[in-house]
Image (tube, rainbow over all chains, first blue to last red):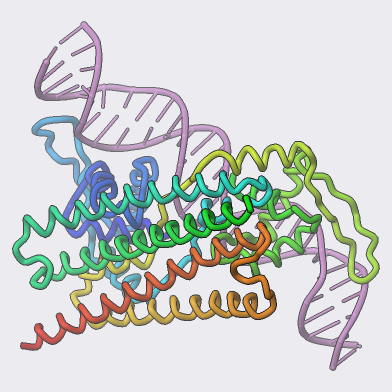
Length: 188
Length: 188
DNA sequence: TCCGCCATGTAAGTTGTTACATGATTAG
DNA sequence: CTAATCATGTAACAACTTACATGGCGGA
């Protein structure tokens, strides 16, 4: 499963399950999400497999933490996965399915409100990514041409999100125009 | 679950599980996939729920077929779902995760080959959608401005795929250029 | 003292995949 | 006759979600 390798990869620096969850929520959420209830058992499994090891961190403040780090075997596994070529899974997109089936209602108004609702959601997400990019650009003088390798790859991933969301918005706009046009000619 | 409603929606015309599978593979595969092993039990569940009813079709040629059609209750359920507003699930994209974690290899060559491999896959899919669109445009004189409602919505869904794939390709091209640039400056 | 955040976990259920089983009919 | 396609299904597994349980610690 991909999550195993993603955890392995994020553990470039030692971290607890809770820390990793925060990374998902703040850094990589635009291409992968994970719940704590999935993270904790997966970390345990990886440790049993000797791809990770853990130690209980002395709790200065707050409750006990279990901090994981990768082993040599874990790194080998990660590298093998990274070298194993592109995997493009086919996406299931509920909103496209809804649109496709909307003729059952025979009401272009619903089609229009679905599209405008979608446009809004895409725009909100795009704003999120853009402000991430902006904060980064302003705080790191090396941005974007002189970034170190890790940040360079982060940037590629971020721009994937930007491109996708822009395309979604352009598609929604084109579709909204098409629906308007259709509604006018229906009246006539 | 969405598949239930999608089956319900596709059953605008009566069909067997096998027929529906073919629709997934040829018509809606670019936004939803389903296996027979999931379709058959789901149809049975929908029938038990009285959203569908079935009859055994007389087998003129070929083995027995079980043909399903929607009930009034099924149509009500479908309509409620269609009216329930946009659902945008967050997508998990393995290839973006790989890219993000590739610094672990410290080898831009692998990044480059991942990106070119992706570009190729996206291009192949785009070709598939474009030829679908082309066949359609050539066989239906009403295309694209005077399509009936059902086909109009199909077109919206198809164009969603085209926009997305085009954006993916543009992103891959930009990324490939960035990697090349970086490889040159590394040599120096 | 109570609330919110830190931190780890389990249980049950949903959704989807892969592999297997079975048999009818048709085209070469 | 044999392979491909039509047609329906079950079993086991994998990935992920939602809800629940437990407790420590810090600040208002």
